[in-house]
Length: 256
Ligand code: UDP
Image (tube, rainbow, N blue to C red; front, top):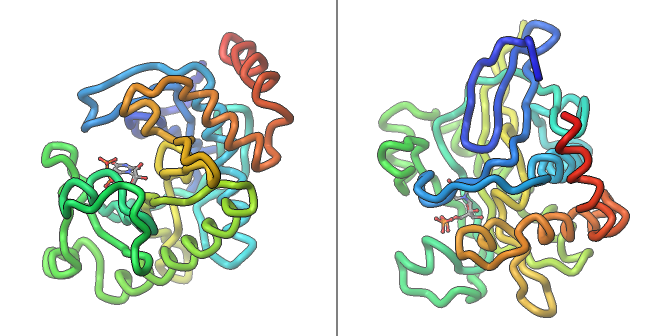
């Protein structure tokens, strides 16, 4: 598939050396993992959908002034991105209780939170990405206090924008996870939104029915995972219709 140098392989994506110095190619795989990779599957077409959905969101965020690593999509599964040093944190933003927060604090899933809550997890697979306090982030030097402030402020802006965007297509944004990276250029260092934003990294519920349109369909064996991602893409106006897109995606899969 590629003669390029592979820089990194993660659970759902591969990074290759880019065409210019300071760039990378981000390849979206069909692999899905959950529970710290204890559960694994290949979901045909997922990578294509996440590539398109993440592109759509990164472009929109760029337009409202959030600096991102995204440069352009190059094909069905790949994007050209700026090379960054990933800050070893998962920044989670929650509007409605779900998942680990519901378990940890005993709050029923679906309970509206009094305000958006931003959490940090330390990116360390061996430890299962533990929840940490801002104190740990700065004390251990994972990010400076100024970077923490910047990440929280970007995260809340991203949350406001995404909540509105999804509300407009009948979807409730329950929570999401983002990552930031440091981008070095001649003028110094800049924090950029990196990684991806897709149904793999968000909880998205249909506004009317509460139907889950995200990775919980895989985590909880609810079925029709790719169909749900295609539904999100369709509502965003990226794909014409769910049926057609899934058929087309199978064709695409065999071609690349
Ligand atoms: N999330 C993610 N990657 C992770 C952990 C969480 O993208 O390694 C996302 C997850 O999809 C959800 C949000 O972050 O949208 C909050 O996840 P939570 O802490 O509830 O963890 P989970 O219940 O998924 O273990």
